[in-house]
Image (cartoon, rainbow, N blue to C red; front, top):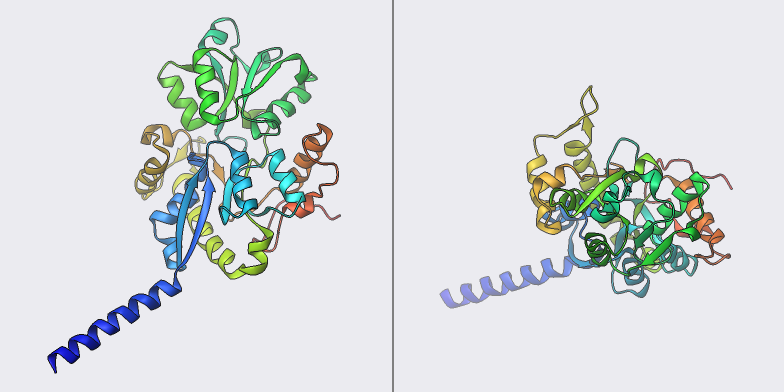
Length: 339
């Protein structure tokens, strides 16, 4: 009798384990280990994905372009990073589609800095207004960095061709190039820029939001996944938006003087971000970008990005910006074009 009960108990445990496993969906997310990726890390360590029955694997990349390629090729189910010319070309081929926002360059919120090498700074490159004619490092043609330099130069009536724009392929290469003085300036997320400045390796000369406010990043997936596994996309998004709301509550309040006020649970979230980005808590506190708590996009800005990339022959002329976005997952997007 005892053996029978033991056998039945063991069988019951195996059945329960098998059932639980069957209910768990494995999905992967391609991302950069930046502070701007905070919501996906928070959702993981706070158990928001698990509560939706998802087991999430992170695939950390070294530049934004490979993130989009990973999603389009099926190597990752979701991607979260800055929007690039390469992304829009893939969107035009039905490879990727935006479903929610990530970070944006919002006035008053430091995220990406213009960073000068010590050599260039000592030679007079002490502000963004002095970037004309300098050697500028970025990752690849059509990158977020390329886009910001291009828009900045247009605003001032400068020609990007009069400067030396060097494609360094990967983000770590940019940091190494500015530290060694091989380039005069780059753009870097605040967590990196603040760390390098504190270490005496480079100088912050301005912030992107002061010059080029824009919808920098987004959460995206493939049209194929939306069609075949929409419920999975919705589960992932629910967990993600729970994390963006928590991020907002703990990090995006300001006092009467405009200073950031950290919430009572901020230390726990900072420890999570530190785990994945390796940035120190103090640097993280100085580097948190603005992330819309409801995942809303500035849609017209995305259309403007596509137009700029087309004009500069970085995106195929046939790409329709409407194909880059699925507005059905999030309500209340900003500036949605009517045509």
